[in-house]
View 1 (cartoon, helix red, strand yellow):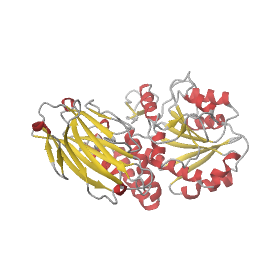
View 2 (cartoon, helix red, strand yellow):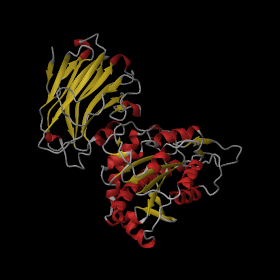
View 3 (cartoon, one colour):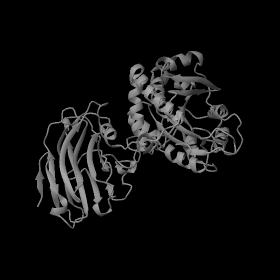
View 4 (cartoon, helix red, strand yellow):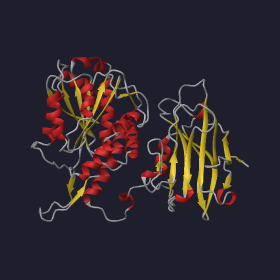
Length: 482
């Protein structure tokens, strides 16, 4: 017999169903058809006794569908909210739950709710229920009848352990900062933050720089600061919270890009990449390279000069005829690795290249050769084409963003992305018909599609190691880059 709970109500699962180990948590809602399209996601945080997740893999959502211990599985993202029954389901094997996990929190958020001016006032008939996974018999249900006129995130309910018994509580608590509310609340601090050991002078300086940069961004560049927070969410999803890298933006300045520059779209896109650079590098800057018929090193974009950087850039580097990817790739490699020979190069931090173009290159063979040679270097090339391709971005979600088009304007970039005979797969590619056609959060997620795996492989291949002891060569110790 199903028990109906009210807000704050509790249900002792261990007493009511003592032999039950495999349960399902069903979450459902209906979207008011009078409103605009909503994208709603269910997420789960598995918490330790300290109220935080012990590992990023205990944050289960549409891009991480199973917990680290294998006890919890997410059914996947249902973007429409249509149909009867559960919209998304969480399956839990209580017997397999890590004994350090004391609480399992079920939350539902509106993707990009704040940016789209959406909230839960347009969502009706929301519920959470717990039932026997095998028999489908419902044990308890909570219908959220409260009015949430400003909230973009809701904690529906939670499973928790008390006196070694599993219990369920109906919560119904709203938040106005989307998924970030829960990330801030539940993501565990790093071991470095929790450590009470005396840190080196260099590490202390780095911490101060981080705090100083945050304050500077809030004060002088609040728009960039907001973008940095979005980039941070994507980095947490990719387990790159503490990762450091140099970010580079390489821009096509061929004549066909004219409208994109004139309408300010390249300026705004550059600001998004600058935010990623601020998150990856405390210098709060990105290097800019250009290519058309020739290649150019255009200097640094910083939080001091970003507001008019691209318009000023075009005064010095007018658009030109011709498109040569290889010339830009060659210049960038020589800039960061002046002695470029085939072999493993080592750098303090990897270099992340955001390479943007709207047309095909005239030096395909040279581009292929340079990219193969670059696979021995700690450089990752993220190619983004503006136009149509078989890797055209049509929707959200890393697992469902890339839809195949019937025709492609960028067959070479598609082939380049799949190219063999490389030391490491050092590139990724997608296309957008408009650089502003997807929300910022989706863009940052896209930029982290293949890069995290490349970082792991680069570490195993020793492409990126750093010296800890700057003393004699004999006594030097090395540590892998984060």
